[in-house]
Length: 480
Image (cartoon, rainbow, N blue to C red; front, side, top):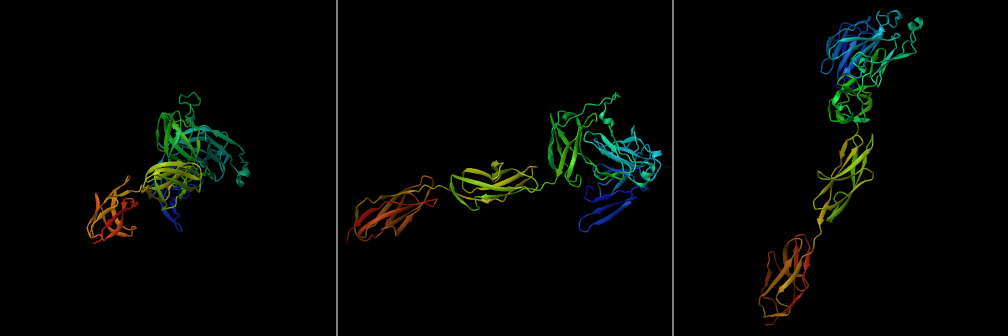
């Protein structure tokens, strides 16, 4: 898998190709990697978009580096192996270097017991140089396997199962474990070096997510990397890849950032290693990289458009679901203000003291930290409105007026939690409106009042829509 999402083909034949899997798929051919058909050579993805290819064909010692980070692969020669090999394995080590072991040096197609290559070699990507290391006790050729172990060592095992293998008696039902030089002290004593330790790390993380690595040696760590578990057949490990991670250090932990794309780190289980300044790796922790589907969340109560009276207590209830994990919590918001949260379904929160014109939101967070915010649920909150007071202050009860004289009516009105918007003046049972006044002192001049007995009332209206009718005030207008 190349960083651009295409499948990259690096051999064994010389022409490099890529496969775009969109739609019905499309192949693209590039130039030649080199002049060698690397039958039973080996390949190792030792960094993001960088492949080491070594050996194969007639037991070549030639090695190349292919950089597939751009639109066109770039090939550069690196130092050759000390010994030509075919049917060998390349294994990415815990520090990103590469181990070559096994194979034959004669170019034999499957197995040559007289020309097995026993000494291992380690390739340093920083210098391009190979270093010859300790030899194996037995030959490893056709169908052999080498895999990096979580403790930084390499298990080399098996070999055989072919007609030629049977004819020469090659069936390796055994294994050896190789301890790379980085696990020993540099003083040549042969003693194992002290190792950095990962005290804790997350079992699962997602792309681009920061995650914590607890280690008491945080200040000494020089590298953090992920290595995918291997799957070897016919000299090629199709799965292994080393992915360095950026990180920052604090007193007792590291904060590393997971790769941004599944093209760089396909979903699956990886070994997480930290390496100290002496080049010594930790024992790995297993970390699963996943794309992590986002959870869903919806407010189930109150209904959108519900009305409340202030100061209101609104019981907010939400449902949440995570298709590939669990919902860790649901948080409740008013706009951008966090109100509270709940970690157990059914998810709910009692929102108290709610004022007018507010709304609520819910946000779900799953067990990997992915968040989803629900649609807003609008609610209408009206304040509790105390009614106004209303009273007639003039004329006095039982007052008498001459025929067709003007009766000056005065009223008082107050509102304890708002303002008076108008006072209306009525005669009789309130059905006959005489007039109104919107400004205190409230008054109305009733001209040409007819003779007879009259009952007067006023109605006060406040800005919250409440209305109060005063008590009656009786007057008499004498006949002509």
